[in-house]
Length: 124
Image 1 (spheres, rainbow, N blue to C red):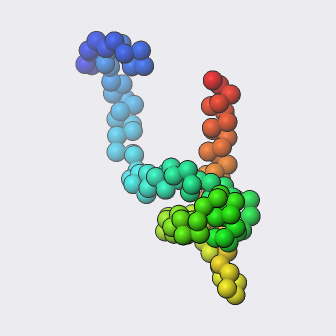
Image 2: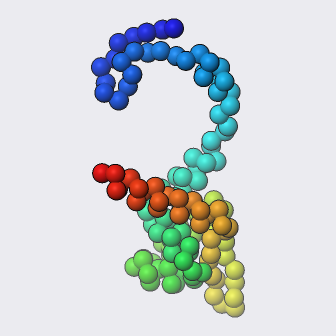
Image 3: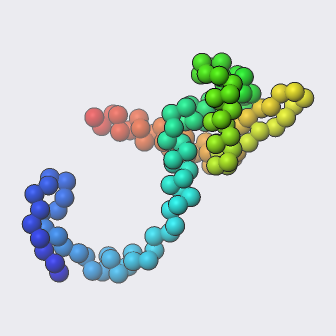
């Protein structure tokens, strides 16, 4: 067991490894690259707003642009990023293209995110 002094309030006062926990968990961490990329995509406030809107209703690019006060070109760019990340899908109806969330998992991600943010705000 290695020990070392530390003065930071959010760290242990001594460095001490629980060898059993380390042995149990060593090598169990899965590849988090895709998950990190998903959160990077959602880290953009505009994309988060678009996903939120699409969690309420299927919308065309023009509708989203009007609601957010943005250009169609800018919204299209963000939708492309969300589509590549498999967060949204689209369907064509004549000359209109409508976007919706790719599946229920996306709704759950947004719902859980909001619940966490609201829980954190209440604790402050």
